[in-house]
Image (cartoon, rainbow, N blue to C red; front, side, top):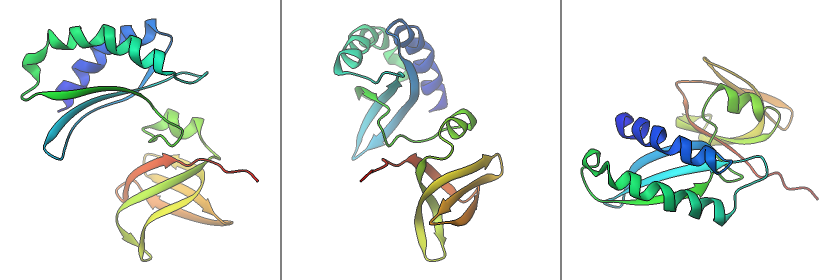
Length: 154
């Protein structure tokens, strides 16, 4: 799968950049028996449907030229990374330090698998979040995913 993701990323990068966007993530996954190729894009001023459409129209025929790398048919989607996006690596954790996040664990810890709090720190060994003034730390091996949470203000 990583070969497909790396190839799609390389093919998409110049098109996404030309449209003043950046690739946030690429995934090739099987869901309910169907394959999906999804490219998530971002830009500082936000993503519109016009960005998604322009990139899709230009990239789709290029992907068709490389159909031999896909074993089965797939659904191709271009989408915004979204306000509750998955954090992927050091630059994301640094950029969103202090923001609300949701941490999903592989196995329950203290009777739960999902924790929500403010991102305090991250390194290769794990991460820390503040939940109502209490620091909670998780090792990298425990963490399945970390997503931004929408901040609701009263």
